[in-house]
Length: 176
Image (tube, rainbow, N blue to C red; front, top):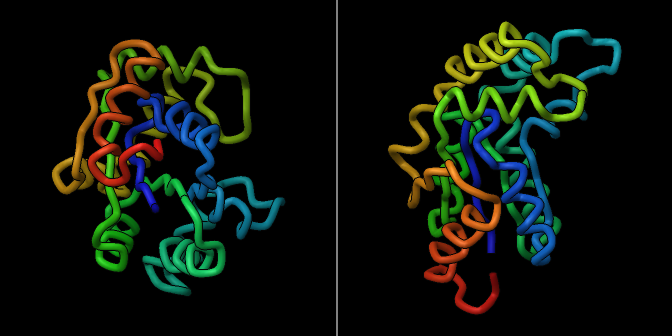
């Protein structure tokens, strides 16, 4: 089974993806594919990815994800944040359950700014706002309108996992 997760920064995608990993799903994050392809000396991953997309096609990350899916098989959680990638994958994997995780902006900002410092993570309100603008460029707002399920994540991790589990049971009972 291949599951697609999406949502803005701080919505709970990573937490839900980790939960699914514990259940045996391999994690495939399209932004990590991009990071792996960008030279380490590149300071701006967004600019490097845009250049790559201009050279190799807008859906290059989704195409690379499809190659990995074909090679790996098994249960996979895809984390997608771009309209183009989502559309390509949904077209190729028509039965793929898609979940969009949603949370209010203030709550997402608080979650993001309280995280441990990692590469490419917002550390200030200005960083958070800049990353929100980058996500808007990816047309992430398209995804919830076309997802099978939108989960409002304003509660605990357990509540998020329970809501996702109820939805996914429709696709693969007793496996989640």
